[in-house]
Length: 352
Length: 165
Image (cartoon, rainbow over all chains, first blue to last red; front, side, top):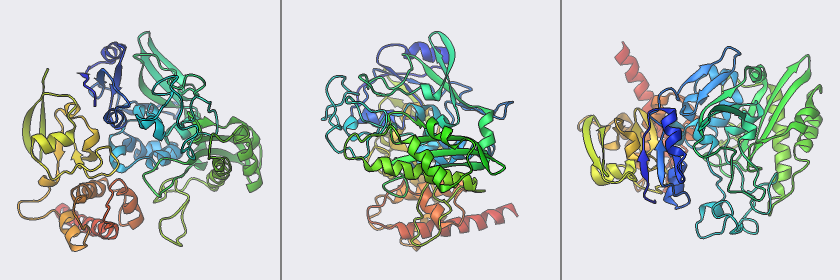
């Protein structure tokens, strides 16, 4: 790990001023950045510890039935907040399918949004990577890439964004509140992450010093809470990143879908909102055929970036299955294995 | 430049001068405070061997900067027994053969204590396994670990009811 200066500001404005300097990075729990620093992948000259800034750790219900979640709220605290989980069950399910209990107890929601890709070549300092060293090349492009992107990738970078939390958030129109050198602003979460293009080193639309202070979920999305699920296919039962995941939320009335929300994870450099699939579902009577049609629409632009053509068909099946689960209704209690398509007990019937 | 922090470790207040802000909570416990019960496995948050309780919650001490935990309350494996009386989770690990080589065991026990206090798993073996998935055991003692956690939880729930009465 490189040597760094350590600062612990007590106000947001002090933090922004301290983090505007070149080479500065924010530190919250540190569960991702410390890992990157130990591997020599991140080398900040200055760490600005925001954990002592008061007021950033609150979960507030808004007058419109939405929620405002402070950037320092821990993943576990949000997932287990009964009011929040009732209003946004797919978000709670996604959170509980991510990482391990220890990491969820520490990791913050703001940090979750800004976590880096788990592309093995990004993590391996001996490999070339356009994200780490712009213009150096991409060893993933012709390497071990069966888990890489099938949507929105470029010749420069085929990495995926690893967050589970972001997938239902982007489906439900989450908004990110940001404090920067020119004051407070807010953007849709969908606008936070960038696709790689020729500049994969620019992963978000944040400017130097910008601090995520809160995430807001609009109340309108709470109307979808009766039919909301997250499904995540992993290479082992628990404690693994998604091969492919999907969030689906439906507003069903008189046997018809009034409104649908769908997003995918593990397929692109950002959480992937599937608007064409949502349009395909509006007004339809829920059925397997309709869900498959929506899934085809969601993956219409997909193309393999390597040995990962299987992820396209897999994504379609995961989207269709998530929609079927959502249509069946949000379970009273989260399944024992949140978001899992499998049971770890051979032969047992599984709630998902 | 050195930094001074204060931690309460296993009930004892410790004032510590940190020469280097890079020190993790894990290295501080092992190298400075000589509390070597907490193990360094992967040192990257993947194995759970370094699990300790910080302010009542189980976390990976390898992915925590000590300097950022000024004023925290830390509980390690050295602090869970009551004198020579083992903690019920420790006793249950012995009773159920919840280990073989023992390297992951302090992390498993701290994680199990955290899991039971979180209260999400109840008596459901599947929820216990899911809740313990952040602790790897390369000897494969998972069956005994799950049985130990379930048994200890039952015992602690009974004791809790007795305390309340």
